[in-house]
Amino acid sequence: MPARPAHIVIVGASLAGLRAAQALRTAGHQGPLTLIGAEDHPPYDRPPLSKDFLTGHTTTPGLTLEDPAALGVSARYGSPALHLDTAAREVHLADGTRVPYDGLVIATGAAARPWPAPTPAGVHTLRTLADAHALKSDLTAAPRRLLIAGGGFIGCEVASVARALDHDVTLVAPEPLPLQAAIGPEAAAFLTRLHHDAGVDILTRTTVTALHGDPRITHATLTTTDTPTDTPTDTPTHAPTGTGGSRRLDADTVLLALGATPHTHWLEHSGLALDGGVLTDAYTRVLTTDGRPDPRIVAAGDVTRFPHPHAPQLLSLGHWSNAVEQAQAAARTLLHPGAPAAYRPVASFWSTQYGVRFRAVGLPRYADHHEVRELDPATKRLDVAYYRHGRLIGALTANRAARITAYRTALAQDLAQDLAQDLAQDLAQGRAEGRAEDTAADLAGNPAKDNADGSAATTARPAPGTSRAA
Image 1 (tube, rainbow, N blue to C red):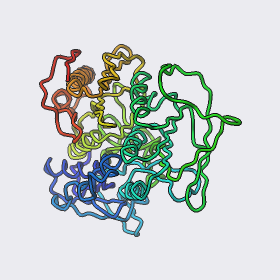
Image 2 (tube, helix red, strand yellow):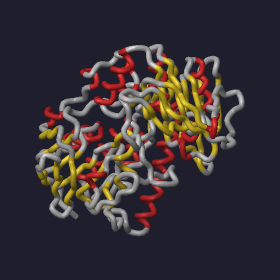
Image 3 (cartoon, rainbow, N blue to C red):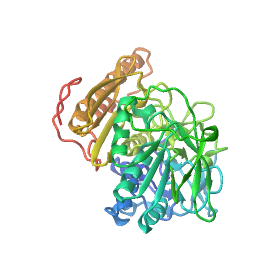
């Protein structure tokens, strides 16, 4: 078992990278700490990029997070990592520098999924501060005909902002309804009606197959499929019509909201296991290609895939709360390799669209059954509980934020019980080494990141399984 690392390197000047640095210092690491970032500036807050930053309510200085220099961190910005040599324990940078490490935190995040060909001017993705500046410049220059390719949360949030700025907006989604696979048909229909009532034209079962214009985008080719769906019949969507299921749609600005791809290219040929992200064990330790954890390397944030009791497969979470909490767990594991802390989070997510405050906890996407406990389009209130094999695994509310606290408590207690059973089994088999002694308490008592600013909710917690009006 390696000793506590002397020089720790964090690759990724992201929220997860910054929180890892803070957690390492808080836990007593006094040795050298290096933060490597591909962008030219310190870490910043990303959630406002698709919301208040585009409207001008938040400016670039308002995105600034804590200064890593205050932690005694040696920061290297603007020179991305190109290769990891695990044998020599060195990170190779684009400027030719090789940075040695005793312990390594991988927090390189993810990039917006790109279009597979060159694009005309006026076609955007939205992941970085530079992306947000470019899109904002287009949206504030003149009235636009905005096409959004992708019906996930980023696409929906930008649609809400663009309508507030009085742009014409068409949202194209391959699903029967935007976000249906993630939150179910009733909640997706609730969200879709909000967009329709605000004037967004929603084209479902449709994809963008070509972008046209020189030098600036002028139109796109859309293609639709006629797959039967269980979409609620009163949902205000339609599919485009035309020869062969295709049609032209005029647009002078396009947002490609097609998902994300993890920043793992620099880890190829490193000997680490990569499959849709960096694979870790339940303690945030990165796995090698032979399936063993490397005790000197941990990972946190969007770049990771990790096991979770509520998920049927390795889990990737692109949420603000996961970046914070997984970074803290990774720091503990790196400093205490003999007693790593299990990471079993209650995922948390928020979104505000057209003034409606959505809150989600857990993993609704993996449900095999859901229960609509409240659905009131008139008051714009929603409450849905999600289950897998009869076990509560998630919840979604709209304008019912107080109910999320009860759901979070129930999920945390379920995960704590699951962890206790695993530890008891390990003790019975003589495998427990004192690891994760404080994890059950963390799971049961970790304050909720329920509010839009990420602050903890202060509402008293009802008993698990109960709910209460907001």
